[in-house]
Length: 485
Image (cartoon, rainbow, N blue to C red; front, side, top):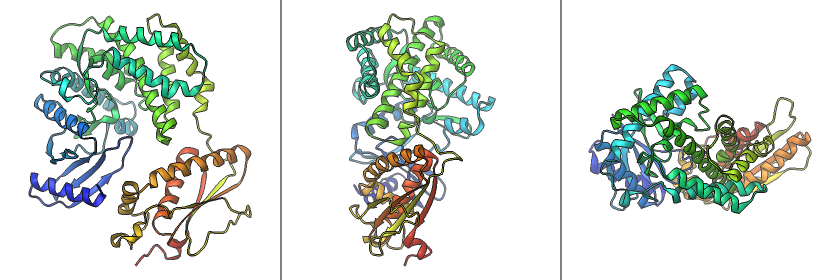
């Protein structure tokens, strides 16, 4: 479905829910998901529209949301679903996540209270949400996070992360340890609804209240998994006293929800096992998304994930007889392994200046003022041209409508991933060798849409990954002072 068709579908679905006219429909930047989110506005309110081709996933989210809402859980209300099941409209909780609040305010009492509120709501969500939930028919994958699902996460870590390191280990002994670990962890005392990805990025803060999103991967499982996910999220880097105090508070509110006392020592021992499982699952995801799909955000997260694992191993032990597994864990958190994934960064002493241009092939490739004879020249004309559509003729690659078109309707994202792979090799090598200049140019027919978007995208990528100096020129657009008629 094209971007224009999606907008029409959103407008039609919303009209069936409310008669108030829409003022705008704006795409929200995507992260790791293949779902596309839109914020839609009326004169008085905003909503979220979600488009996804995985109908089963959409159905799971809608069914879960309606069920949890009936149990008083802090989840979005679903206002409408289209007949095909590819689009639904839900309540909007804004843009501020718990992670945003942590990054903005730091480790303050205000943020600590938000974490406590999140855990109190989590206990209610898990235990009350479990009541009457149809796991067999509603869950997206497994209905329960039991031995096979735990083993699957461990093998995910093995294939997509551990094996890429090419470190020596005994495969048969490691698999045997995985089997024993999975068997042990599957025998827990408290199994209720398991969110599966309960982290501060999926907890939205609106009017100082917490709200949950992205729980469609949930299933029946141990209470400990979700609290482990939250407290050991690598990006959050919670201090140890916060982790300990919040775990104790979580056990308090679980006892309130269950109206009975737990064996806290046993609960905490099982919790440590689930911390380890979660850390393995996250490293597997970083490996798959970063090392195989070449997504920069996940690649740069690998050192964080490994340092998080090292912190856990330094303060805790598994309490189980898993010799090969423990040997491998200590092996992958050594400095030389972590350093493999830390990208080389430019500093104030780095002489390299990367010249990035957009240009029109009709006017010619820009000259290299450094006298090096030029560098990379990438031809964007194989990408579908927005300029052929009347609505884009007066716009540029910097306009949101054009960038949405290039990201959703063309192969520009795949094209740029290949560009990044090639240019990164040279940038890293040039920084190491003290070279002063590298030139990268993007050309298209008129130097207005595709090449402008690509040049800006590479500029952001190199600044984020290497911190290198950039000199950016949009040759044709600067000549016209960005005025297009």
